[in-house]
Picture: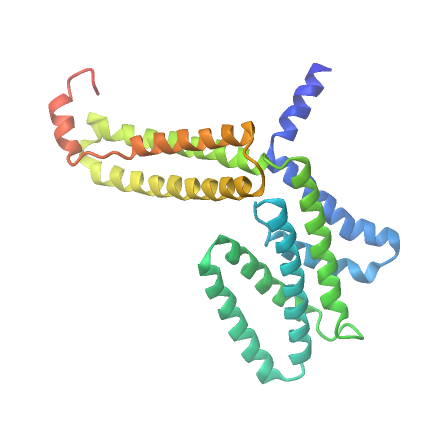
Length: 273
């Protein structure tokens, strides 16, 4: 019994396994569920809509998730409908596809949130071209895509309600792993055997430092969205303290010396190195 409890506890704290379970439920619903209900013709477009919606998902508070789901559904329906209307007019179809793709790519430069939505929309445009001319009415394929997006969005919101802090926990655990790699990279600069490749070690250190800085910014954004959504609780303060602790370690680890070669020359035979 204790063994089963340990397995269950490890499962419910593993974000990858929980996300795999969520995707399993989504794809089972869009394939076996529709097959069992007798809607075989909906399996492909609904599944493609769910896949495109999954690529637009990102960690945020509940109200933002609901708002994002509405935006994604409207965007999917609009983009797919426009492609359906322009399909008979090849020149306008090519022009729209080129301009819209460039627009969504540039929109992704505004931030990660816009980048994920833009990528999902471009992918849905490609999916829409596969089904052009296969439906009797113009609104059928866009509607089926929206069904898939709604199905994924609702399951994503349900899993978020069950375990709202799991993405944040996963990010915090990941940042401490990245900081440990940063500290190991910094420690190699004090090894007297590495005095010939100090420049290469500094370059590797800067790359890892950039990765840690980006992860810290993502955690800060996640914390701010959660703090805006509700009153500050003991659990929120706990996550906030872990973030500040990680940031303090990062600041100490990124303190730099000008000449590591001199340190190795002066202390190469001492216990300091």
